[in-house]
Length: 215
Image (cartoon, rainbow, N blue to C red):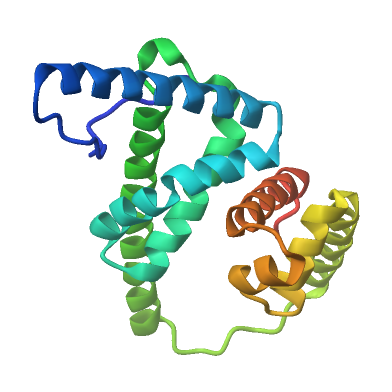
């Protein structure tokens, strides 16, 4: 997939004042774009610290954009996480000839947030339909489902074991001990952005490793 383009709202600082200040502002934006491109190139080389840098730079604005579209804090948080997973997976496909990293990220964020709203609406429709049409308690899983569940469990354990120790540790604290990402950052003495980038990278690896094993 090549770089995505679209009409997403991309926050940009206003240009006011003396023409000299406008030129300086444009030079600053150009410099920032070059830095963003260099960081994204590191992400493409699977540098989780670089992903954390992008999160620190764009995470708050991405969440704000998703929140305006989704009008729900939880869905906006999930959309933000999905956005940075997409950045992790697609960083190598970014085409600087088609726009800046900033524009690329916010366009992806816009598309992901809109898709999240559509998914949520579809889930609600299915839930309402099921509530009207389904009155029976689902049957217990059969032997085939149990076998599939066992196979998936084994693959999850294998995929977790294959993660880099730093990523596996973050997931263990989050999913087995129930720690928040802020608590993990404090416990490990690392920036919150690093916790988030390690989580994104670990989840992306797990999804790839477990593709095709979902029951």
